Image 1 (cartoon, helix red, strand yellow):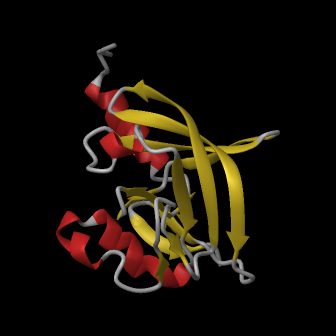
Image 2 (tube, helix red, strand yellow; image 1 turned 60 degrees about the vertical axis):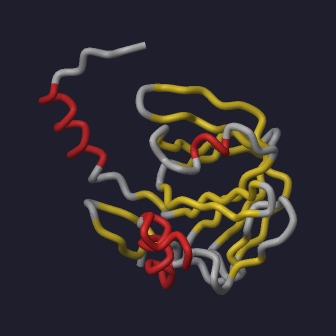
Length: 163
């Protein structure tokens, strides 16, 4: 479905969203033993029963097509000291460096950042396309958390801290 959106409204919406702080996450999957990941801020809890969340991924992202086919994905919520990872996973030219250190990678499970603010393994149960993005819904099957609570946030086009 195509929408005829007023460019002025699009610009106003962009400015409004720049004022909404979001945690920074690395969404991970494993395809035929190859780890893949992407930086994303569009992640949200969906329900407590069952524990579930959603992530929104641009259809132009290299990870998008594979995410439609895997059974599980991981959400690595980044800690304030992991801005370098957010930048690395957002930069396609650094693909070869992404899982070099600090990651638990093996089998077909989504890679887990050992010292992430939080990590959630999700069984992908549904996805919906909307505009330029797809909404992927996952039921949470595993959770790990870091004791210190200081997530990396993205606000007004810059990385920062909640503190």
